[in-house]
Image (cartoon, rainbow, N blue to C red; front, side):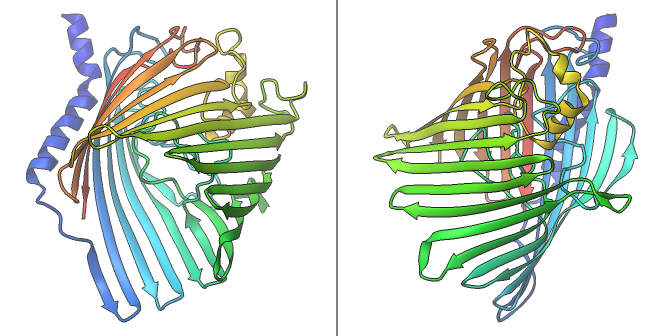
Length: 437
C-alpha cells in the first residue's frame, strides 16, 4: 500500500498533465486561420499562435536516488507561443516570438534529452526570460522572447539582425557543425530551435544561384562590460549538379573551427557528410586527436533512401563521431563532473555523452493523416541504445497529436553516475497535443 501511494504521488504531475490536456482538447474550438492584423499592398502584419500540451511518463528500470528518486515519475510541459511577423515594403521584414512555458515534474532527471531544456540558451546578450513561479523541478513557469529580429532582403544580400534561429549542417539526427543550440538526438519536438542573438549576412550573385556565402556573428552575455561568449563563422556554399558543398571557417569562444559539409543525390538515394576540426584550449576534453586535447574532431556520415512500398518507406541511417564526448563512460565517467565539460555539453558542443553513435530511422505514412516513425540509436562502444516509435496524427492543419515511446537498454547508473551511454535513460511515454491557428 505504501509503495502504491508513493507511485501515485510520483505520477501526480502526469495526472495533472493528462487532465489539462483532455480539458483543453475538449473545450478548445477548431482554431481559425492565421490572423492577418493588417494588410495593404506590400505591407502586412500577421500573428500566429500555438499551444502545445505535453505529458511525459518515465518508468526507470531501477530506482536511482539522484536521477530517479520516484518510480514511476511524470512530467508535464505546456507551451503557449505567439509569433508576430511584419512585412514592411518589399525589402524589410521584422519578427518577434514570445512564449510562456509551464513545466511540472516529480524531480530527478525526468525529461532530460526529450523535453526542451529549461536552462538559459547560449549566445544571448540578454536572456530576456523570466520566471513567474520557480518551485524547482516541481513547478516552473517561465516566459521569454525567443525571436526578435529585423531583416533586409535584396537580390545580392540578405541581412538579419537580432534574435533568430540558425541551423548549420545536413544531419538528420546528429550534426558535426551545428554549433548554435542544436537539438538532442532524442528531442521529440523540433519545431522551434532556440534563438540566438546574431548578425547573419548572406551574400548572393544574381542569376548564379549555385554560389553563396554567409557570415554569422553571435554574441553571449555581457558581464562587467566584457563579452562572455561569442562566435564568428564564415561559410561558402556551392551547388554543382547533384552535389551541394559548403566550407566553414571561424571561431566559437575559445575554439577555432574549420568544417566541410557535403550532400549529394546518387540515383534514388541521398548521401550526406560533415567533418569539423576544433582547435581548443584543452579544457573539458576527454582525449582529442593526434595525441593532444588541443585538437578535437567531429564527423557525420549518413544517407537516406525511399523504398517504393505503399505510400513510400523512407529509410535513413547515420554514423556520428563527437570528440567532445567521453571516450568510454563505463570505464571512467569522472570527466562528466568536470565543470568545463559540463559547460561545453550545455552549450551543445556534443549531442552525446560518449563519442560514437549509429542511428537508423524508418518513416512511413500509414494514411494521409497518420504517419509512423521508428528510430534506433546505439552506442557501438558499450552496446547501450534505444528504440523509439513515434505516431503522428494530423487531425487538421490546426491540430496534431503525437505519441512517442522510448525503450532504452544498457548498464544502469549507480547513485546518479552513468555507466553507459543510454543506460541512464528510463522507459518513457511521451504524448503531445499541438494546436495552431
